[in-house]
Length: 321
Image (cartoon, rainbow, N blue to C red):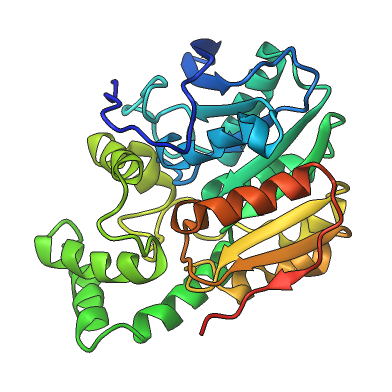
């Protein structure tokens, strides 16, 4: 399955390399922006979902520009998604965090960067990044966990509160269709969009690269529906009881914990990262929901670039007006 890139942006450069690497019964597609032989520490970007694609995170490729530090930036589509191999016949036992951890290790080894790299994970990608970091890989230098819960029970509790605050009747529609098992209905989809416009991406209509990632889930929902469920907040898949909270003290690298003021990853869902990781600091973007790299791109790039270069940075929690 392929996705045609019909969108362009001032924010990301053309890929230096696009290729695939064999993995298990298939392959992982990846792209590199910048020069891996430059001596600069590369940044590996983990997309969300699970079941999404790298497209909506392409603005981070701008970190390979001189303005932001000239570091190589690696995006990839996780197996089962986008330009990587698809396995719709596989069941729940195949789609596990351990599968995606092994895929990440395989890519690091293939690119010959396993001895030194930084990692940024967004949403599910941040959960995966935390799973990777608790293993204390020798080459990991810095970690960015963006818009990610430390546990799915915390995520679901937060989602219930956000849903209850939606306009009158919206949550009733969601609950009715979830109880009836009719989450594919147009009425349910429309109600989900109300939530998404508030707490996922406040840039409406969504930018083309975000729309491309959402469309990719529709093209093959295998991973998303198996591990997550029919929506961001109705999690009935294999991740519904996932948690990394009790293992977070094992993370031994400086960690930046990013979220948006209107994020579905609410303060309660990210607080364990700040409480349990020895060297963790927060940054909350005042005008953003779940995609601050899209909603406040320039500020996001500045903050992440500053953190990755090791510059001293105050702890900042922005407050919206």
